[in-house]
Length: 156
Image 1 (cartoon, helix red, strand yellow):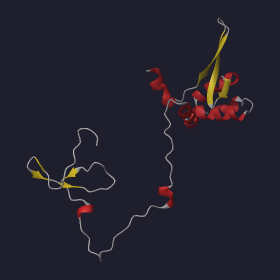
Image 2 (cartoon, one colour; image 1 turned 120 degrees about the horizontal axis):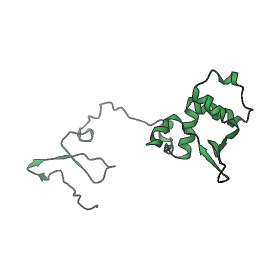
Image 3 (cartoon, one colour; image 1 turned 90 degrees about the horizontal axis):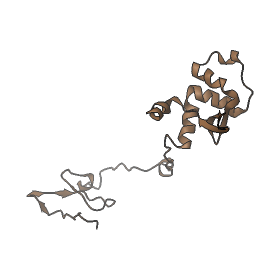
Image 4 (cartoon, helix red, strand yellow; image 1 turned 60 degrees about the horizontal axis):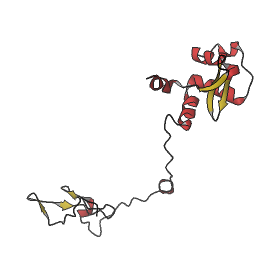
């Protein structure tokens, strides 16, 4: 039994009051309760009882892992869900040639700005990234394009 926990009998007197216990076989240890529970109510043999039978879908469901917003999977999902970043993501990922300005004119300023970086955009390990070349140090760095949902938190 874990420390600081006591088993309370139904006849125990705690602070001068009589406590009823919920006798739930799945809970351990038993926790005192002042309310009547369904387990404490007697049912006549001829009383119909509604049984809750789990459907095959309920009992066989597997919980999906939680995707954290700043994990690679979370960023990929956010990029695809963002209307502007997602548009460019799809175009770059499909491997098509750079679309014409006439095709881009209908989209937002942000989508057009990303479109101007076309030669430096690439989907790497599932993330839309932009290549930054530092001429002074002769280095290249791949920067992840952040969706709107992550920008405020990133800046602060």
